[in-house]
Amino acid sequence: MMYKKYLQTLLKSFEKRAIKIEKRLRLVISVVVLSFLMLFSTFFYFDKALIFIPVLFLVSYLLTYFSLLEGIEKMGWFGLFFMPVTLTVFFYMFYFLFPGRWLTRLSFMFIYAVSLYAVLLCANIFNVGVEKNLQLYRAGFSINFFYQAVVAFLIFNILFSLKGFFLINVVVVGGASFLLALHLFWTIRLKKHLESQVLHYAWFISILMAELTALISFIPLRSTIASLFITASYYSLGGVVYNYIDEKLFKETIREYVFVLIFVLIITVLSISW
Image 1 (cartoon, rainbow, N blue to C red):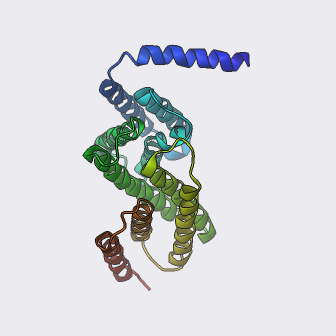
Image 2 (image 1 turned 30 degrees about the vertical axis):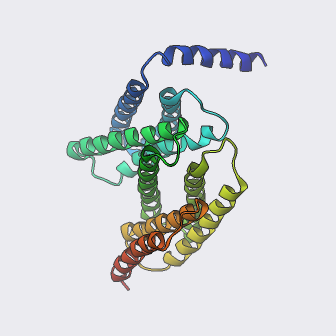
């Protein structure tokens, strides 16, 4: 009990000081600190730098809290933090698929900084409770969904590059898809509590993605193409289910997502090397 009270007092003291800093500046500070930490971590070989994964996880979570501060409640401790933390960890892991050159490193850091700032802005939009009929919310959702697809591609590409046993691929893709879908569907109403409907549809997406992964694991494809197909499948399925839950599923919407999936499917089929 004493430890809990001390922690609460410490957090309140931190909030009182941090809240005096303008929010946009807090976002910039978080992006700069994490970008420099990410840059520093790239100077170590991956097998010697595994310590940076929990460090980046913890620091990105704390800096997201520093950026947002006000109004974080219950489900928000997952929903508002999920994208900045996930983006940071998997950007770091994805970096090691590239050659360790300064041009690559600096370009990578620039893309990471811009991406992190974008997802932090989206988290802030969701946190302040912007009305869904406003353009700001729609822009925030679109950017958030785009970066979900980016994160999904990073996760799947890292996974397929390892060329592990197909059951491992199935479990990882299913688990990652569940968390991504859970976050995506939570942004529909931004409730403080997890709704059963959100949970059920997240499981639905997870099962479908796991089945697709099991199927594609037996097809001879390059890891990039396989990752692109699984990502496009998540994007299309997630988009259709999202609009269904939000009661905005029209023929034009279905046509757009189906077109994306068919286009990527054609690329996938043409890339098969028997």
